[in-house]
Image (cartoon, rainbow, N blue to C red; front, side, top):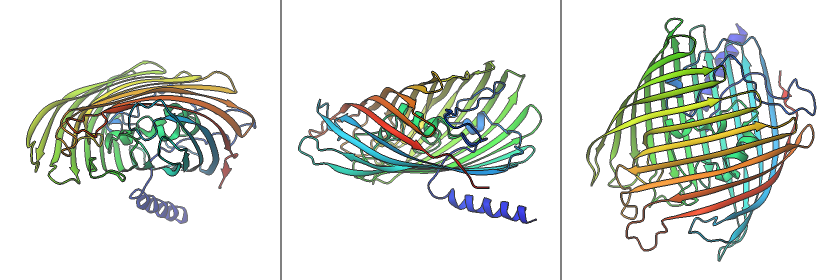
Length: 476
C-alpha cells in the first residue's frame, strides 16, 4: 500500500513537471553503474529488436512499442562537467565574413533515472554559458544555453503511457545543435551513453520545428503525451498529442513566434515477424503572435509500411495526403492540398550506428514564415573504433516553402538550411575524455527587396574540449 502511494505521488509529480521544461526516454541499466572502472560504456542494442527511427513525426503512433515490464527497481544520478574552446566564423550571422571569433564554454550535465517494474523516469539536463570573443566592431559577450528533457512512462500488460516535455534556450535552433559545437559533438558527449534519442529530434516534429535563423536567441518548449494500447498479439491502437511554443526573444518583431497543437491517432498491424503496417491520422493547429497572420490547421492521413530487413536493419516508409486551411490572414486565406511522407533506414551493429531519414510535413515555418511545407533530410553514423576511440559524422538539410509571409520584411518564398560535420572522442581514463569537432553550416532565407537584409550566411565551427563525468551514484 505504501509503495503504491509512493508511485501515485511520483506520477502526479511528473505530470506537473510535464507542464514545464524537459524531454527524454527512460531506459535500462545506467551506463557505468555496474561496469568496471576504465571501460567505455556503449548503448546496449538488443540483437533481436529492430532499431526504429525515433525522429519520425509519428514515431509514437506508427511505430508503437509496448516493452515487457522490467523486474529492476533502481535509481541513479550521473553528473558531469564539460569544457571546450575553439573558433567560429561569422557568429552574428550577418554575412559570409572570413573572420574567426574565439568561442569557449563551460557546461554541466545531469542525468537522473528512476526505474520501477512498471514505470520509469528520466531527467536529462545540459546547460551552462558560452563566452564569445570580440568580432568585427562588436565586443565580447557571454550567453546562456539550456536543454532540459523529462520523460515518464507507466506500463501495464497491454498498455503503455508516455509523458514527455522538452525545453530549449539557446542562440540557435535544435536542428544541427550548433550551440553545442555541432550535432556530432553533442551526440558523442551527451547522447551516446544515455537513453535519450540522439538530438531529441522528435521535439522538432510534434512541436515547433526551428532552425538557427541567423543565430537568433530562441526559447522552445514541447509537452507531449502518448498512449499505446495492444488489441491483439498483432494489432494495436495509439493516441498522441502535444502542445508547443517557439519564441525568438531577440527579434520577435520580424520573426514568426508561434504556438502549435498536434493530435494523432493510429492503427498498427504486424503481418509477420518482419513486416507490419500502420494508418495514421494527424491534426495540427498553428497560431502566430504577429498581427495580420492567420491560423493554419492541417488534416493528414498517412499509410506506413515497416520492414525489418535484418535483425539490425529496419526500414520505414510512409506517405499520404494533407489539407492545410488558412483563416484570419490579411493575405492568404484558403485551402492547400499537400502531401506528407516519411522514410527512414536504421542500421545498428554492435560497434556503430547508422541512420538515414527523410520527412515531409507541415511545420511552423522555421521562424521565417507563418507555416511552411517542409522537407527534412538527415544522415548520421557513429562508430566505436576501440575501447578508447569513438567517432561520429552527422549531416542534415531542411527546406521550407511558405504558406503565408509573417511580415512585410520576410516575403513569401523558400528557406533552406544545411549542416555537415563530425567529432572524435578519446577516453583518457575512467572519468575523463577529450574530443575535437567541426561543423559547417549553410543558411538561406528570402529577402525580397529589403535593402538591409542579408539573404544567408555560411559558418564554420571548430572545437576541442575536455569532459569529466563522475561515476554514476546509486540513490537506492
